[in-house]
Length: 441
View (cartoon, rainbow, N blue to C red):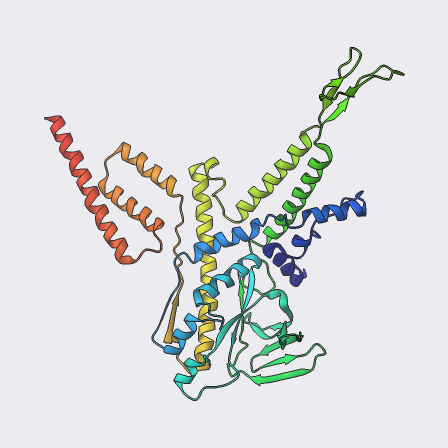
């Protein structure tokens, strides 16, 4: 399998460009003329329904609903946390974008880059931001690499551009960036070395994120790209069918050899002579219904792949929904572990570059997601409450519902709400018990 081309195809489907923008992802019918095909591609421009990106965004939103905890007292590391990529993006924003591209492809690369110059003191290092920074390298940009026995790069090269343009002068060159355990290099399009310097990290600073653990692999959401293409083509074919066949035709039944006298009058009345009235016929709606059914099935398949129950929850039983939520939570837990591992490794390289101990910064990602259907949980609570009065159960169940609903709330706020729950549930139980005593008396 050519993974580079696979990642390129996934990128087009995920970002909605390339064949999903100009219509070239539309497949030609075997008996379709070139002119008809070109017209259909043109008609499909700007009509791509990008479900892929919404599924990924929703998934990653769960990951970062509770932001990772990063603790350090070092001023340089705090600067990197606030601006991770020298573009003003905090580490949370950077890692969220990194995770989205990683989830779409199953693989992504993180480069720990170092500045070309060194500062004379700490103040200058902070003011001029002469510290390591993070750069995302999409895997489809890789041109050459070697993996060692530990699953890391011995060396890797990837395509890039060097922008030297000024106002009125477009000067952009294609280059190749190369990194190994000792040095980084820049090559021009002809393979000549433009620049070279040691990075001093002792290992290749390009780190691999992979859902399956290996660079040459695809993730569980990668198949959404192919489904997106199927959906794009089915929409195009349905549109062609509706345009070409779903209109009424006027028919007139006449005896062989006769010439019925039919015309539309000035007052829009259809005049005819004879005992056979004209009539309209319409095409069979079954073909369009078949396409609509296939489109719906593709969308349902995309929901299953992306653990999305928002569009199917009303039609699912409680057990089926519970199984889906368990699968989603397990997937999030595994993906979060991978993100924590690569970020911790990246910070270790930063500490090496700055001469700091790796424990100068601590990183902890949320691993306990416990995503559930709140409505279903509330129904369960109400159902049990009708059977028996269980104050302790009510209190603990309400706490779990509040915790799930208010994931971003401060711990002090949650503690205060939990106290309210204990107090109110206790009062309700006491009131119910008192009424029961009075009824007995």
